[in-house]
Image (cartoon, rainbow, N blue to C red; front, side):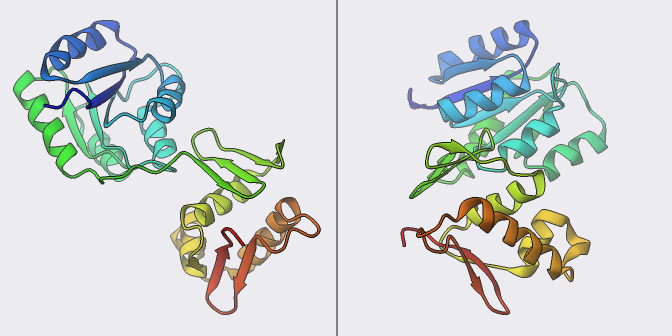
Length: 228
């Protein structure tokens, strides 16, 4: 095992974090710890671990909410480690971005095997949590948007739409995909939503003389213009 591999443990129970450290450090892993969801998300962005071990029963937010936030910008493999053993909990975690699920108490050999498995499936390159394009900066981990160094206040829907364009920056994102991602699977025919919110984004993000940031591809979708 390479000593460069790192794991972020997000768990509010100090004995579990200690047990994981004692188990994993001898295997060559560097261990980072976070005792709640918000600190875990901050550590994921700052530390860029190779794997995240996540408990679902966190004191500040449910682990599934952490997964949803993390998957807005990162494909880092996540192994859920939880006392919850109901099928519904496992399905919710897996459907929202977990790569594997292991219940407590756990066996050391199985834990190590599952970690090896999720790492084999992991993408080679991880996304950067901060997107920069000219004067625009979008921090996907904290959801902060700035333009020329000044914070831009976006509604939740405006941010969700911008995030989807940022994730595919430079490429055309079709109407149906945007509607599905932002408003849900039943909104694919509601193209008027897109027109209204694209207009809102343009007003907030495009400045005089800066040129178009969001390009309309008639009848197809929209594209976030990069480096033009």
